[in-house]
Structure formats: structure tokens, C-alpha cells
Length: 126
Image (tube, rainbow, N blue to C red; front, top):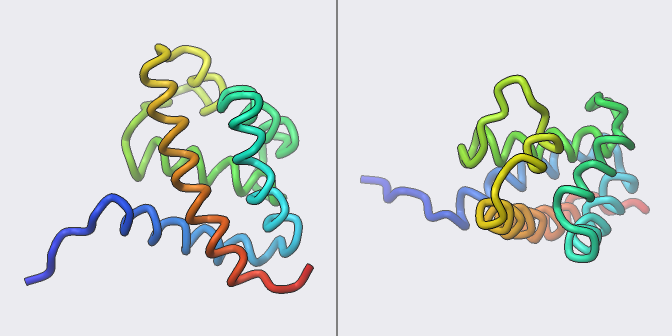
């Protein structure tokens, strides 16, 4: 009988899949994954996700777009922390209360911790 996954195992598994997809964007993806956690700590999750969204131009065909999609999918589909319905992730972050905002920020930073580790190992060319 298999034991259920822990929160960290689920986070790690999702981050590994994300890093594998990020290999297509090479050093851009790797660089952004390293940079975004500091942007979150300095500017806040909402401002950082708005920045990432603006750089993605609303598409997931560049490294920023892929990261934006991966983070929003983690928060909405995998963790079911936010329900976007007709909103995008950055907009929804402006509508939630501060306790929920802090909780989601901590969760996203934990995801980036795993993403950074796997990206370091999977994307070796700079």
C-alpha cells in the first residue's frame, strides 16, 4: 500500500515537471527562476506576478509566460488555493485578503525553492 504524498513531495514533483518544461527556454528560464523569489521578497507577490505577466505578454510561449502559467496552475489547479474563474492570477491577487495573500506568497516561495534546485540540475548550459 502506497503512502500518500507529503506536501513537500507533491511540491517537488510538480517543480521537477516544471523545470523539465523550462529546459526548452534554457538559460532564460533558469535566470528568471533564480531572480523571481527575490523580486517577491522585495516587491511582493502581486507586483512580481504583474511584472512576470507583463513580460509574458499574456502568452506562455516565452520563459516568463511559462513561469507565470506554472505558478498560477500550482496555486489554482494543483493546490486549489484560489479560484480564478474569469480572472487571471495577477488580478486575483489584488482581490484577496492579506492573510490569504501571505499564505499564497509562502506557498509560491516554497515552490520556487524546489524549482530553483531542479533548474540548476536540469539546465546546465548558460
